[in-house]
Image 1: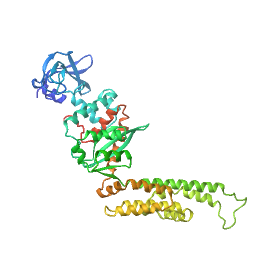
Image 2 (image 1 turned 90 degrees about the horizontal axis):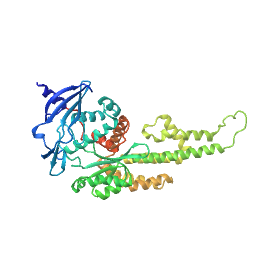
Image 3 (image 1 turned 30 degrees about the horizontal axis):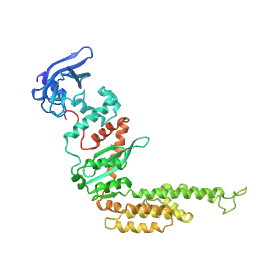
Image 4 (image 1 turned 180 degrees about the vertical axis):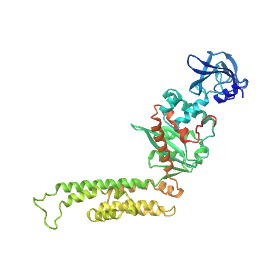
Length: 431
């Protein structure tokens, strides 16, 4: 095999003619003097169409390519300008590099793949580039891969919407996931109706009409957006509704503990000396401590309780019937949501009637909240769709952010998320 063929293989493109190859003494770097093939010459760097030669530009340029051993390697070529009918006078395209990039495609692809698997600091050290340059490379590669791929918005039927924090100080990302492919189709910084509306405005009327189910939490801005852009789609609130009940239950437990503690504090202190036979010492204090330690017992499912935890609940029936009733309401909602698609409507309706007459204000408020999302809760059971996959994607995004040691530019962050979690994923060069 000829040396020039080997060099072309190292650069990762065959659309170039190698003129020379030498080791630069000053920088100890390999320099590949090259030019595009005749078919690739005089092409617009924007649209890649043939154009007329304009002038020689500013002389020769260099593009960083993959290292050869422990030495840096560069491709050096002239950069003439061409006159494009559409874009005017622009720099001619080179087949081995992207627009506005000083790196070869193979080099950028390797950088992007590494960022998806390790920290940006490690990539910066390994590839010998600046930390902020890594984010710029990710943005360019994602735009290039996205333009060459089929539309990720085609065939959207079941989608999930959720927001996740990416930085302290209420910095959020809005994520849209395709349930059928388990891949992120859209991501943007911020949250709220204005941000989510940008996603639906990207879609064509046909793509919006194809959406049948949308899973999300109970946020009103999501419901409003779905109603406006996809009126025929079913909104699904997944069975994490039980977490609403557990929050209300824990609130009742804290209130019961506060009342028991205040009662124990105000109770008259007994006199000096040993307690009489059969006398209970500080029963109010003992009761307050028992309520305080009930948190994990109350949050646990009734079928999973141990014998000791069952005894604690039996003690609760005598000392605090209201808190025990709140526990039964939580368990009742959990069992109602486990009912099948045909039974869930009547099961949740019965539970709401029970919550209405339970004489616990917090559960009556929860009933009103469930009533507002009743149709979405039933739809989630009917179609078997939850936000579990969206939450899994959010966890992957948070892991990516931690691994990358932070992104200062949100565009780079979004690009990296899409490269890691969407169907558009980078590959190592030559594989």
